[in-house]
Length: 348
Ligand code: KG4
Ligand code: ZN
Image (cartoon, rainbow, N blue to C red; front, side, top):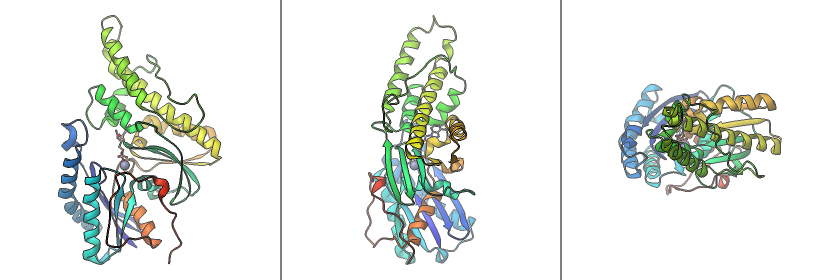
């Protein structure tokens, strides 16, 4: 089965073709970063309009890359939520229109299921059951995955997502949007010994997170540092030191909760997905944790940590193969709890 995947939930337009026999055939991505940079964050209306502009050229690109003709496409998968509602509706209406025109089934894919299954596109995919750490701009979740489609949330953030905390702290530091990669670069120049930020909610039981306090801590540290600028030797590197301390605290907090979740569940596989999964410090520490605990660790390749069409095509292919497609009416969901999803039924 050959499936076209469309991702338009936020500020990246992703289109891909996945074939159940041959694997990923082609993928193309257009990032709107340049468009939103001047505003310091995503402007939803601009995002929707730009998805409209990009979808058709990207579709041609993947068809050409894979020498696929439209009659070889067996189904269409689009991101149905969660995300920005206008942006989602662009992908949904485009996907449903193609499905109608081509006489093919279509399915709405859950964006986080897409992220969570992205490591399945790699040479050595994880088997179920596994623990998944989902760290993106909108979500921070620890999920127990007993089978594809059967997701039990073990912990989640009570306020900001970790990617959001990276972005907001980056903004305080005068870095551009998106802040995560820029903060990571600045943190490399920082002194890890200078500040010690708190590790929120690690001193109590449970697997939930809270990241909004870290951003406030960074703000207060910056203010205090700025006012003492002249008196502290090396104060010129204040921003780098704050970036470094913030990143250490955020990564450490994720590690503490991952370790706890692995110990509580006894699971021996850990899957990490979502944009923050691209962070080198997080990846390094997770490798160390996996060696210490003797568990297997799975990441998507770097370009599939952030939003992309490939993960949507893959997740959609599994759903379509299981006979899960919809009638002609459709809806997009800005909010869509992942534990509402159903498992895959046997084919036929
Ligand atoms: O998964 P994603 O592309 O979009 C959402 O579904 O939210 O994640 C985007 C988030 C942004 O907050 C971005 O700053 C963060 O992932 N991010 C990073 C890095 N690369 C992307 N955060 C920390 N370090 C990075 N290298
Ligand atoms: Zn995402």
